Length: 198
Length: 187
Image (cartoon, rainbow over all chains, first blue to last red; front, side, top):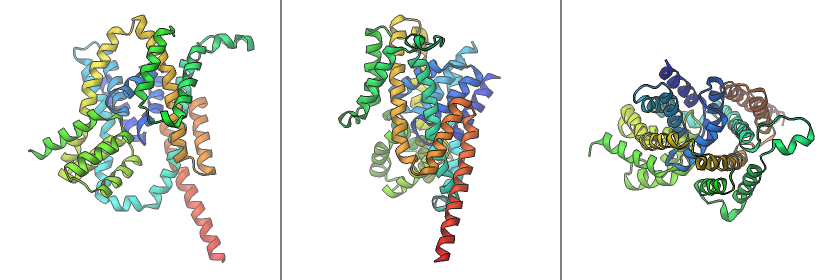
């Protein structure tokens, strides 16, 4: 039953993804690889939609995946049921864990064990997001052509994408532009994509 | 007003007003929860937020559960969480339905090809920001690199990597503390 699977998979994401924003991304990439529910390109689109709409990114991504997968069942209203189930799956572990921790907050805050575990988890979470970023880069910045030696390099690299990504990355490191919301860059990239026929 | 309804509406408003979640939510959370409703003090909120960052799950959801729990117990925690996810559910369902109908249009295809290049830049710039806070000494740099390689090139499950890194973090910090204790005793 696909809905049970959706709940279970997103429960796992909610249980192991730690931190805000993109923390769920590596888990979703793995989920896409294992289940075939969505490709790396779909995932990149989902990131863009989640960043450009209100609400926490992780929740938006879960809703989006659930809607798509639920819709594939062909059941009437399956897409909305899928969206609700994936979202509930994602938040269920949070509710359980926080309700337990809330009872002994002070002990948790001062625990050396918790502190030690999290000093290992923080760099790991960053490494996972970087790895997921590489797989998004692979589909966004390469054409998918086969490697047949150094002279095939120009055919493999999606030059328009590389230039745009590099330009946006550099802009984001400029102090004056750092405060700009990501939605500004996403909108600009959409316009550039249409104008220059990406 | 009914306490549960109040919790639901307050957190639904929060969910609808934050873009990007987590870190973007804090200023609005302060205004709504601390200043307007008095549900928590500034310090308490900072505590909830810190715990929300280092427990499983989305920060926004964790913080909502925390505040809801302190106001109205387990049911309150659940209702606050449902409130914070409700706007996402509605908005994303509408957008997803819209995109499915227009996904084949050339304009949409070109726009998303451009957007994907932008998403790469967004991801790597957030990696740099995160690394400044998380890669702070030689062994956290080792964990970062090993996890990056094992995930990107070996394809190990992120769940396994998270569990192993937690164990490593605990083992390494315990060892360092043990060694330092030995040094102090020698003096």
